[in-house]
Image (cartoon, one colour):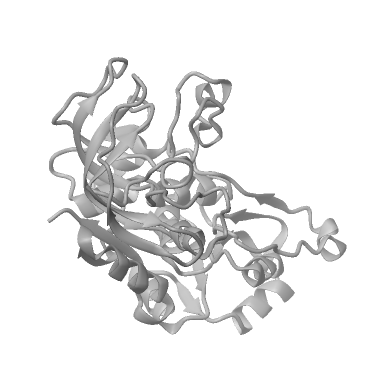
Length: 342
């Protein structure tokens, strides 16, 4: 099969590699019909995650068709259409029993495209397939379905839920990339009074305006007014930039919440000398994707307007082109980039 292979910092190529095979009785092999490029993939390609070894097939989000199952897979069979979660879950350890799948201790967690071969390929081996897939309804488009593999659950679980967004809140989202704008879409379910998005890139601010935020602007007077005034009830850090985190600490009110959902490849300063008296709650987290079935139900009923989040589509064999477009999203306006089997 063909797949995008990581060869070390700043080096990837679309190569011919062996087809995946069943290695454990709980595995399934899925034909990839749609996959994406994620911000964490860019971090890997830059060499920010040394645990990813050269020779690894990248990618951790996919939608496709089951073509083979191991003997201990009981809820899937060949021909089933599934959403492959970015997080693999054994389903039996203490963390999985508490729905903390991202913390699975029995070989799960974020392993696809990291510790084992991933989804930016024609086929993928899915570990713990019964617990790591969600059935895709036949009428749910591929471009919508693939957002449930990671993007929307991250926005909800790590951003909106951890941030305790409530009706009437003022919400600030720092970073108008895919996950930041997904957080805006999901946060609308909770009826915040006002949603403000902050970004340095004009193209990203235009994208935020299309999603329907109340204000979209560069850091400046709005943040200064918040820091000098009542502040935001919840601030979601979605930029993955150290300066973005500092901006969050300025914008949040006393007693407010900061939810960090951006992938950080560099240290971020925590100025406790000025923050200790603010009674802040700061949360981080690895997505669990336990919310995917609920989000799927909302999407099926038209409650999550996600179509603006997918801006570019490619064939699988244009994987490296997709990386370049996505990497230049601050100038191209690209948000979620989806690749389809042709």
